[in-house]
Length: 255
Image (tube, rainbow, N blue to C red):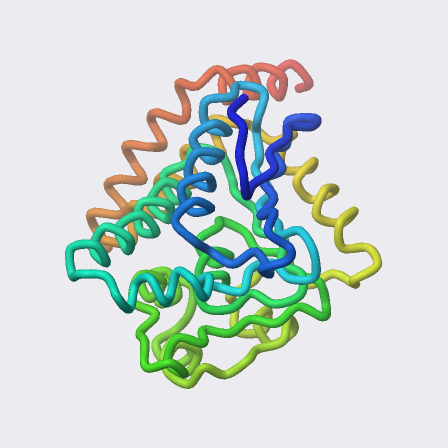
C-alpha cells in the first residue's frame, strides 16, 4: 500500500475508504492531492479484496474546490502549464469513470466548485442533510469546464445551466430533487448509513456491477440503435460470467 500526504486510504470488509485529508484547508484541491486521489483509485482497482470505494472528506467539509495557492499559481502559469494542470483533473475524472468498481461520494458540509465536480464524478452520491453544493467558478469569472460534461449527464439542460452559470448554492434536499445526488441522510446517522449502503453493494456480483457501469457510461455517446446493439453484446458476455452461471444454477436447483 502506497503512502500519501493529503489522502488516507484503508480497506475494511471489501470497502476502500479514500479520505481527503486536508481539514485545515477544507480539503482544497492542489496538484498533489489530485495526483494522490488518482493513485488511490488505481490502488483500489488493483486490489481484489476491494469491491466498493467510498470517497469522503475529513473535517467540516467534503471539498472546497481549488486551493487558493493553486489558483494563484494557475493565474501566473503559461498556457501549456495550465493545460497540464487541467489535464490532471480530467485524468482523475476519467480514471474514476473507468474504474470497474462503484465509487460512492459521501458528502458532508460543503462541496464547492471542483469539490462539487469531484462528488458528481462518482457513480453514486450520498449527502448529509446539512450538506451544500455549489459550482462557484462563475463568481470569479471562471468556467466549470472540466466538470460540465459530468453535470450535463447528471442533469437536464436547464438545471445544468442554472447550477453551472449562476453559482447558486443548493441544499442536499434540492440536489436530491434535481437528481445530482442519490440519497440524503440525517447528519447523526450519516457515516453509518454510508457504510451500510456500501456494504449492501459489496455483496452484489462484482462482474455484474462492472459490466453495468461500463455499458451505462458507454451508451452516453451512442445513438439508440447502437446502444441497443451494445446491450445485446453485453447480454451475451454477462451470461458467460461465473457469477451469472452460478446464480442461474442455484435458482434452477430450487425449482
